[in-house]
Image (cartoon, rainbow, N blue to C red; front, side, top):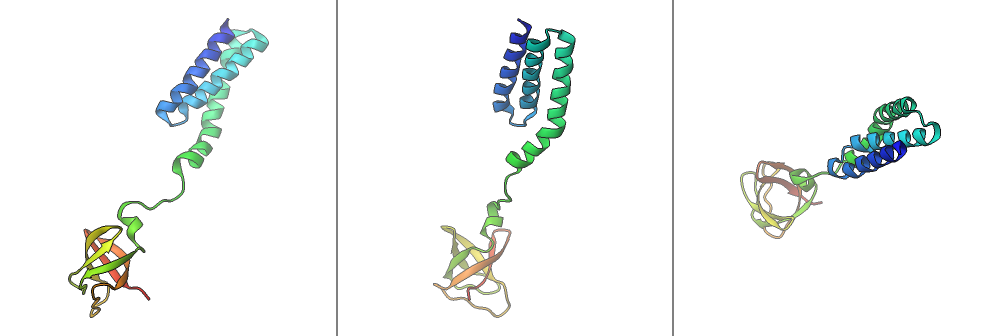
Length: 142
């Protein structure tokens, strides 16, 4: 009967992990499953609790950090304006060092040339060098 309680507690904690997503409840749930196994083998409540505690702490300390690195950090994905650096754009209104417009990622952006004296005419393909506020700093594509 006690093994069934350990088993149900473990399953409930593992299921609750879906809501938290931080791998803490998963580790404690797995510890409870180890406790259920200890209960089924020994029938001694003190051993069950010790197995549960050691397994849970061990999983939290040793396994959880590796799981978090593997599943939660993911690859270094650029987002927002960082993702636009290096992208191609097309000049809509003449771009010089002070002003201009480009079509970038389907949107019209204010733009300025990266280098002094560079003038880019409409229709020219450019590369985004940086995003400065709401302005794309561009250079001519080679």
